[in-house]
Length: 120
Image (cartoon, rainbow, N blue to C red; front, side, top):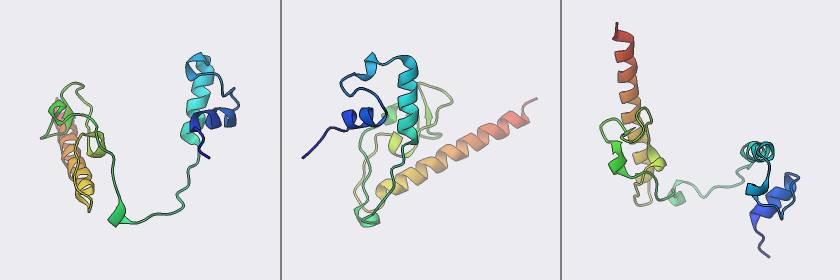
C-alpha cells in the first residue's frame, strides 16, 4: 500500500492532514518548515559509488560566469555542482563536476576577498 507523504507529515507535526499548507497561519507554516528541516532521516544503507546518481536540472549555465561560477542575474551568488544544469554519465563524472566547479568558485571568492582587503 502506498501513502502520500504530505498527509503523514502533517499529521506527525500535529496539523490536520486535510488542511493545505496555504491554509495554515504564518507561525504554523514556520513551525512546520522548522520541524521538517530538523527531521532526522538516517542513512541506513548505500550501494556505493558505482551506483551513485545525481539529480538533473538546475540553473542554466548561461546564467553564470564560468570563470568564477558567479550568477549573472544575482551578483554575489556563486553556484556549483548539482545546483547547475550539468549532467554526466555515472562513474564519477558528476562528482568531478561538483568538485571542479567548487574549486573555481572558491578561487574566485578568495581572489575577491584578497581584493577587498587590499582596497584602501
